[in-house]
Length: 170
Image 1 (tube, rainbow, N blue to C red):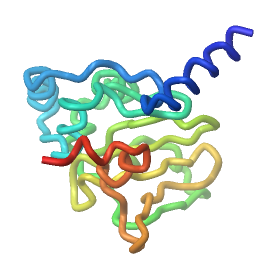
Image 2: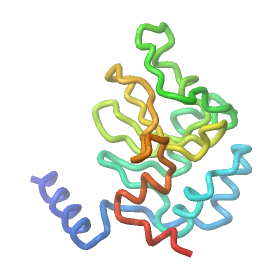
Image 3: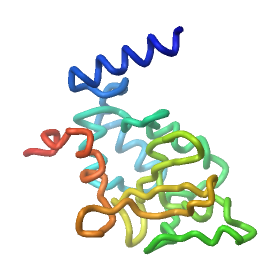
Image 4: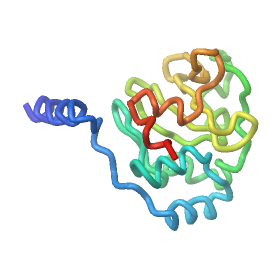
């Protein structure tokens, strides 16, 4: 019964134009502190979102804040500084290291979409600023989300699907 009530509460938020529960925005100081600690600069559209819209992205199962996304990789030290290793989709599911985190180095966990399906934002390397799907748990590999032109989607393009294009108007 409680699950149904929560679902109805979330539906009401969506109908009001406020999808899911989103945490409060972050301050410039909080974002800069995170970037200094990790030795990276977040993509500008993601920074803008964190400072002006919400402190974490929306997600079907859940969205992750900056510090939560690091918990999964805390033991790796320079995980975010390492360049993201892919320039195109990758799915070598027979590889012995298929599930190894090295295959998503240089990316932040954005959302857990349920059933071993994650979305990640690349923060280092040539694909910086693009959103990728990590479905290795279902043997789906790691692939970029693509726009109508077939190019990898930026964070701004991805978040705009939720109707938040106005938050990027200057």
